[in-house]
Length: 223
Image (cartoon, rainbow, N blue to C red; front, side, top):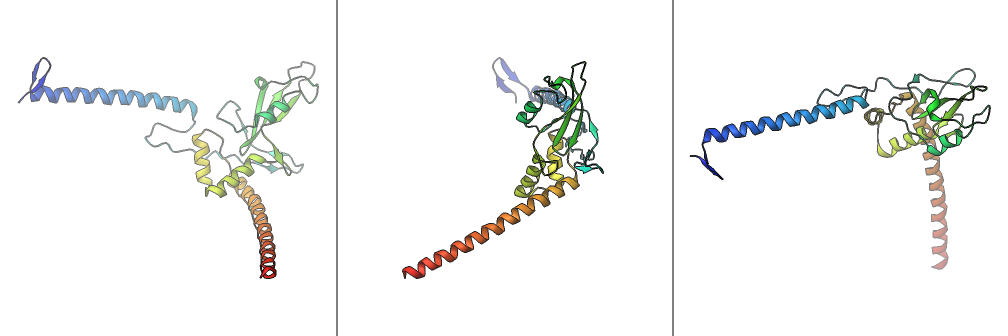
């Protein structure tokens, strides 16, 4: 039996045909939207996004804080326009105020190279003063204790606090298109943070032990 519509009845065959047409339109529009989304992702990421499940590529791990005999950092060089970086704007702004050689202001437009150390980076910025031409090393963040980057120590602290492992960390960084970090770096920074946590815990236990003794003495004195 046909179904009532505004201008008459549809047969069962017409209803099935209409449903089929609408389903085809829905699938076509969905696939077009999905293709656009994949193209957008592909422009922003180096790993393959054509599959249904995006699998981060963590094979290009950057090793950081490897020193030569003179104490200089040795690290692979990356294209500074590729991907994202974690930066402290204040640190960059302070170092761009003047060239270390001639004192003229520097510009990020004149970056010629970048060296990556975990989540930290050093930008090589060329001074455009023709009589200078100095290449300035501009860090993207603060450092402590012989060129250890604060951001890498913070990453290790976050990993401990949240219970994340190396693969979870690098999976997140890869999806954000931030250079991944090495097992060596993460392990070193976790040891650094772990020593501090242990020291703070020992100090806290000593303080509360003394506090407990003091409270016990006050209780005995009053009663």
